[in-house]
Image 1 (cartoon, one colour):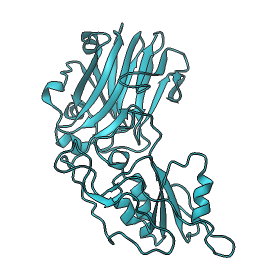
Image 2 (cartoon, rainbow, N blue to C red):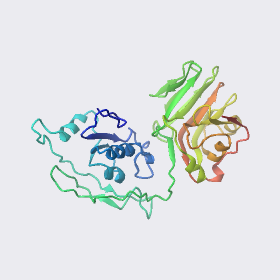
Image 3 (cartoon, rainbow, N blue to C red):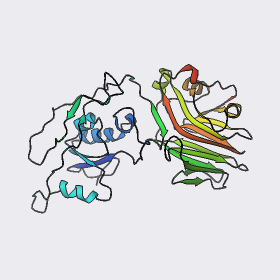
Image 4 (cartoon, one colour):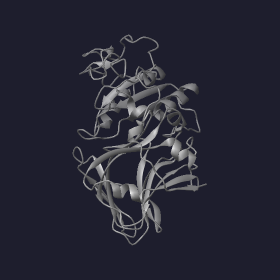
Amino acid sequence: ELNAEGEWTKKPDLAVVVFGEEPYAEGQGDIPLLTYRDGQTKDLELIQSLKKQGIPVVSIFLTGRPLWMNAEINSSNAFVVAWLPGSEGSGIADVLVADAYNKIRYDFTGRLSYDWPNKEVNTLDDNLAVDDILLDFGQGLSYGEAPILAELLNENSSSQSQVESNIIFSGSNRDPWSAYVGDSSDWHRTVSGQSTVTPYGALTVTTVDGIVQEDSRMLNWTGGYESQFYWQAQAPSDLSQLAANGGALMMTFKIDKHPEGTVTQRMDCGWPCSGSIEMTDFFNSVPEGQWSTVGISLERFSKLGVDLKKVTSPLLLITKDPFAITFSDVRVVPNAPEKSLIKCDRAHFNQ
């Protein structure tokens, strides 16, 4: 009766909401703060929506590490850290669901193997481990035991910046963004696996080693057909607060082959709403094989016609000529250093 979006035709007695971190390998999953999904709130919003409808919620959190989850815990009737069950998800059901006689089949016996944080960062020194602990090593509950947490946990962020970065790609695509390629045969082909090619074969996206193993994506245009690569989300993202705080689209990349023709970079806000910049001269000015981190201010995109309250694609590259570039990190950040911003003289406005 209850689907993944929290919609139902007959009101359920209970909702079991299973959510958690996306898979990551060593290095690719490093995070500066102990926040879940880089501050994205869609899972929390689902839990809160169910609670507002009077539906009790049992939250099952899948993770390989302790994270600051106070808001999700507050909004749940019960909160279970299931760690990484792999193919043994049925074992979680064995513990959650009673037998035909309403008797407990298997009790909760697991206990924390590490302290669980009450903050997302050490407020005195963000290079040190979090020292405000919600649950100590070894704590945990079994059925019938009294609650050990306060009725309402602190949900206020302690991080220095109240406007958080929107990470698009860092070792892997970050929620809610996905990567796509396309040409005139199909402009919307999902990038997946080790290698993805456009229908006409003029653009190949490959997973490569950058700073650490398989943390980067190489885009290789061989020419002949106009082809594009882009990150896109299903729902628009509001970047206006980031723009108001000196925000910029920051890119860490390496030029593998200088462009032999025009390369255009675009930010979209629901086609045909977009703003584009010709990047050919800039990319040709960057030495091949050298990692660089540069940014384009959100104010610049706004002046080009981008509605920053409804960004659907923060970065799109398109060309019909040979060109190769590797990205290891793409994000929208507040308070971008002025010296990191590139000056783009050739710009095109679309609306």
